[in-house]
Length: 82
Image 1 (cartoon, rainbow, N blue to C red):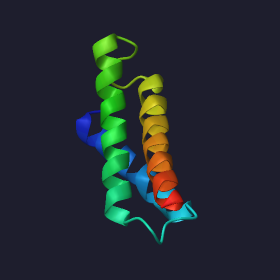
Image 2: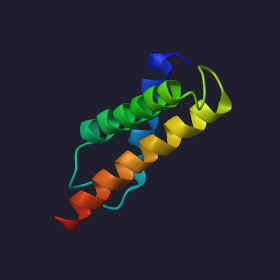
Image 3: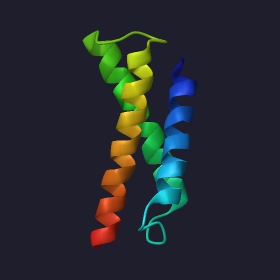
């Protein structure tokens, strides 16, 4: 999976995270999508730099999805408290 694929997967996870979060009326859709894509990209970069996984491995997909989910969850939690 290339960089575009990673960003796309993160954006889709961000979209679904926004859709199913209770506080979706308080934070914007574009912010959740961008944050999901950024989280997935950072996870891919960290994994490649540390040597934990390489392009196309299953662990890369898992790390990208989990990082995007965590980023959107964190954002939703911050906006729910405000």
